[in-house]
Amino acid sequence: MAGDIPMENFLILSAILFGIGFYGVLARRSAILILVAVELMLAAVTINMVAFAAYLDPERFTGVIFAIFVITVAAAEVGLALGIVLRLFRDRQTAMVDEASDLKW
Amino acid sequence: MIERLPLPAPLAALLRRAFYPEGSFRLPLPAQLDRVIIYGGLVAGAVLTPILLVLIVLLVINVLTAPELVFWLASAVIIGGALGAVLLKNIVHAALSLVMTLLGVAAIFLLLGSEFLALVQILVYGGGVTVLLLFGLMLTNATDDPIVSDGAQKPFAFLIGIGLAGILSVALVDQVWGAPTASMVPFRELGKRLFLDFGAPFEIASLVLVIALIGAIAIARRDRPEDTEDAAMGDGA
Image (cartoon, rainbow over all chains, first blue to last red; front, side):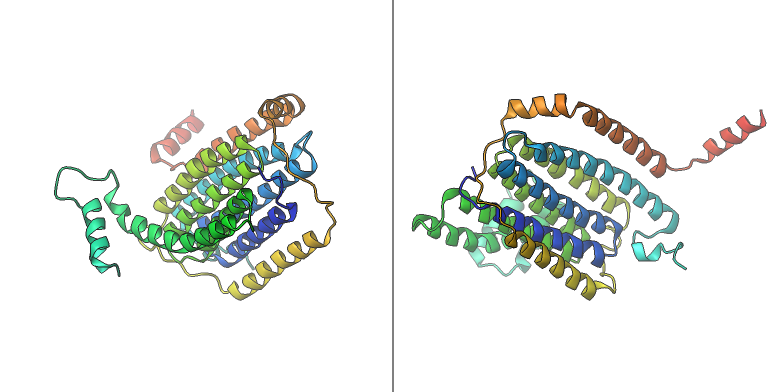
């Protein structure tokens, strides 16, 4: 158990992970790698919420419940986004986000 | 493959015997993954063994406690895997590097006393999401062209990522949290809270999953010619 670790350690770990994920979302071109980076950001947010639940809200642990919902929605999001990427690849023969720029004027 | 690795001869012979044995025994490994397994294992071992050794020395001389050792090791795994996932050029390796991060996050959940979340994390992310991502890579362009370049906005992305992590960290350290201590999340209470207090959101989450999966099927489905003919005939009748 994490009794004697300061809570800031978990929060800073989560901040660094979020920054790495944000970099990945902005820097990558492949749509699936952008999804991977989004998963990193979601993992960072989940760590944050579980740390708050364990340290600040031990009677009601709402953060853990929210983490369960985040994982659920993330799974649904990956399934849906991969469907869209497969469709994009079948119609355009590319999975790079900067080559699908029809709405950019 | 093994001959080309810069390894001492006895180790190379051992690896060769493990992966390509002459006798009847063979490790139950898919041959295509040899390179990924060997390189990934060597890199992970080379990075993590010194970190583990330093942490164990600190534990022995009582600078660290055991939970802190687990925390720093899991942090090293998480940050290393995340950097691999956003920096590696080969998209399959980047997706596999994500698994490392997600398993490290499961270790952090265990450390924070939520076994249920750790199990869900391993099942949903380590199993489902990773396999989905690899299928997505396989069905798009990973086989023809596994190396992708990054966008032109990479320097700005780097600055924004560093800046965001820095601002968040400074804000977190600046806040006075009052030194709380962590406590275990009881399994039974978690179930009560999830299914009683959060019953309606739970049901809505199941609805979201169903709608997302049906939507994914509807979007990704191949338009077969006979379907459009049927539709045309239906319109005519």
